[in-house]
Image (cartoon, rainbow, N blue to C red; front, side, top):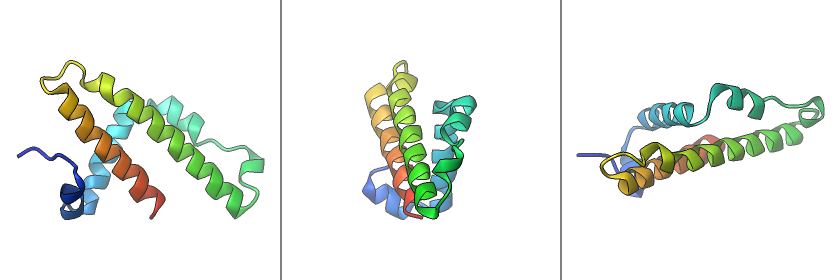
Amino acid sequence: MSRDYTFECLVTMPRHELEEFSARMIGRMVPEDVMTEIFTFEQEEIDSEERLLSARLDAMLRMTAIALNETQQAFDDSEHAIQNSQRMTRLLLWHFYAIHSA
């Protein structure tokens, strides 16, 4: 059975498996140089804990947006393109929620 990453699937899967797979997916969707640029902060962005948290949230949002944008293109040529794009979109959104709320 293929995982669909709906709510029921997400709450029953071991968290470490979800974290591992979602991190691999983001690694494929967002190039390393882009990740470095997104997560490199200016000094004024890290002067206080509040500013650092804000900068990290902004970076996570940008990373997630890039990954989501690439998802459809990544699965365009697959046999079940729409279904695969939806599944990976759910996984990427879970990743953003889980990492940000951790």
